[in-house]
Image (cartoon, rainbow, N blue to C red; front, side, top):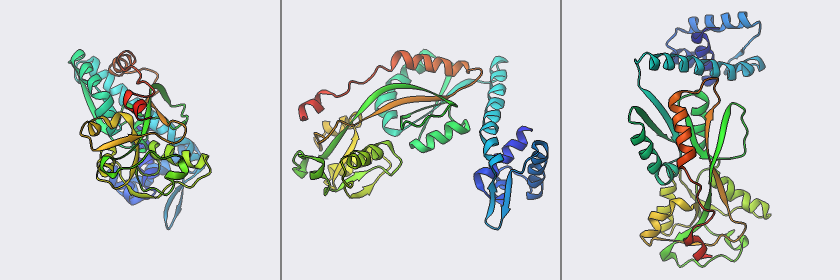
Length: 307
């Protein structure tokens, strides 16, 4: 199995279409088919079933996928390590994180880390939870800061950073009263993140565990900052991380209300791929995160005052 064959194999897995996969890896379709055929002959197993709708991975292909990703990632790491040791490349770490975490939780630490390690290049990518997990799997980021959904993956190491409380917010001019119960909130309009986001997951779960249908979502937004602005305009309620509300609260455009149920919080974690040899730059970053990212208290003074 050559890296070229494995890249071609993963492109076919990703696209489910030979023409689009061939375009991604800059091969003629006939050459792509030859590579897949050679791989199948070496492994002694059929990897794809051809149909009019495209190509479908077999169980053998599903088994190979994780190994192919790991082999290619290790191949890239080996090249980077050799270049770095030879002085031919700068050391760098690529972080992936959610927008709210980047602006409210990591900015000060990353600035400090950069000053302490001036020869190391820091690159930051902002995305959604699902996008970050995919990037971590593909090796396009070195470490992800995201919220824990309880999904275990032996390929990743996970370290809990803090418990981030969520708060119910309303526009200050909407004159909303603290809800007496989840039942009282069931008919209220909400602005929320899309399904699959941890905030939306906790929101839906809270009502489901109470035996209630979740309130109507009048608008969905990928950005927590956008949700806060919509709530401030009076469009509805929102359930957002407490750490994201600070700037808006200082402008007196939103008010925090007590959540009428068990307090909701999400565990902020950092995740990275397990490797036989950890890159020195990533080792420095993990050590710094362990020392500098102190946990956030379960609830801050503003939330306690609202309660």
